[in-house]
Image (tube, rainbow, N blue to C red; front, side, top):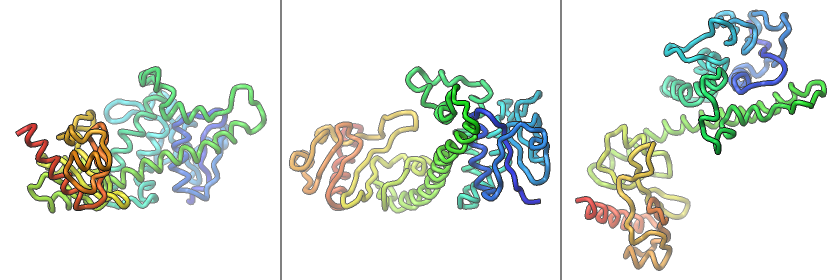
Amino acid sequence: MTITHLVTHSGGFHADELLSSVILTRLYPEARLIRSRDTSWITPGPDRIIYDVGGQFDAEAQIFDHHQRPNPLRSDGQPYSSFGLIWAQYGRDYLRAMDVPADDIEAIHGAFDRSFVLPVDLVDNGAVNTSEAGPLFSAMTLPVLLESLKTVFDDREEGADDRAFMAALPVARAFVEAQIKRRAAKFRAESMVMAAIEAAGDGRILELPMGMPFRAGVEKAGADHLLFVIHPRGTDWALTTIRQGDDTFENRADLPAAWAGLTDEALQMASGVAGAKFCHNGRFIAVAASREAILKMADAAVADALAQNP
């Protein structure tokens, strides 16, 4: 039977049912979203998906609550929220609806679950406290930001909670869709980077056709010999460093110290390259006016790096 209703609870909302609604409304755009605790709505039926309410988890019956005891747990014992349950059941269909290539669906489904869904699950279940992010960032976590869109305590106008929920839904959708699109883009970039690595051979410089995420491809290929990356950037060309890892800003090699913070004529004199335009003071990116100029800067940077670490 066609899904005609998506049912979650009324009243105030949390990030888990809001994010679940993002997934389900993409898959069932014609279904009516109902916020209710009425027994007639939260009783399973073939025409509805019920989530974050109802006191049951039964995927076949299309009800996805997590408040009951025993509560549903992941294989590693960590608790699900309704978002985790909905993602496990419908996430792959959602990725197909987002035009993610079939070969990438499993990898993106798992990566999104680990980095985006699981934190929401843990916060919703009290397994992680957002204060652990530190005093500067605790109010900036996604669950807190989404829940800040709820009505204030003394706004008792009829329908205020439902209006706030529906206003928050496109905000939540923007976060989810942006994350999925970025992950899909990384997979596209990886194949392009792998081809560029093959073309580079034993050289120290990786040339890409445009700016794109490249470090994952470099690591996957085991291309430890590469030191710098060049690519066009608008009408200019950029020369960038390669970080040693996700958890560090240390680079495999820095751009020459003599270039740091220089622009135009000063940088051209320091580098000996006509067309050199800019080098960041942090020595992780430089810009030149042409491919020929950036290649000369890259060659000079490689020579400097090898001289520093023979």
